Length: 435
Image (cartoon, rainbow, N blue to C red):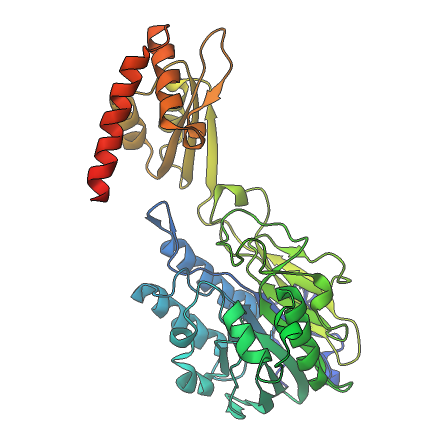
């Protein structure tokens, strides 16, 4: 039986979080692992993260094997760009092959807003033998037939019905639905102007409503999509998939008879509000931004039977190279912190409180002492004056920045003649560049 597993000692079986000797021998329960937003090939301010990603993928293969997963869902943003590095593609395909276990396990992959759908699914025909199903757009139709040791018994635009070890699942597959792709799917049947005037969220709801007609009482009913749902918390490193907020959907758009809704796009693992815990973002596996350091990275494991509520547990990922923000009270404190922590394996943002600008030689000392400093941000403080952050300069006109700087250095306001002369030089340079 596929669901049997050998434990080295009795305590291994007793202490296993996901003890396989439960109800699984009935053949009705399916175990699904939900992950997303791997962003293979992503950089951090020009620094490669692929060593960390490779370490994650190695551990991920063990997580899948140890938890006896039937179906892996990867809900989009496999890569960080439509044209990923060769190493990123090799890492992905090597991992898929290992996850497959010679076709015993099914892996379902959909495209996110970072992925090139055509490039992502190019290896689809070869991947079939390994039980890998790839879906590029909402209009994609997955060919019926064998996928490894399992079978897609029915399919159409935006859905598949698959038989995995005698358990049947109907999965609605909606990769990142740009407005153009959404129109292609819906407007073949809709010619009326009022239908075209519907909001993006309304049209997504209409699409899911239409696709959910394929659900049955005797099947496990799942949704997998890559989109932004209202009420979800962004973490800071997601690239906006909406224009002016128009690409946001309401949680009511999801089918009521879907037992689990596996989502990608948001990097913070979370439950979508008002979905009875059925809709979840698994988040990204690594910290991709300093705003992501305050929550754990994880994936979800779902046990589900036809006609019943699913049970969901999470597995936390390791942090392979943490992103840290060091708040330093002065320049010397920053240099000392770099010396004390020079052998630690971490990415660093330095925030330094100082009453003057940091010299080039001081910056060089910090970066030479501690590798992987991503940014050095001075917070200028002058006695008797309020603190101001140099990062606020980007929000001010150049004229105001110059006046503030001149006043700080000379203790007097600059003469208007000097300001005008400087502006004429700057504007002259800009015009020359434009020409």
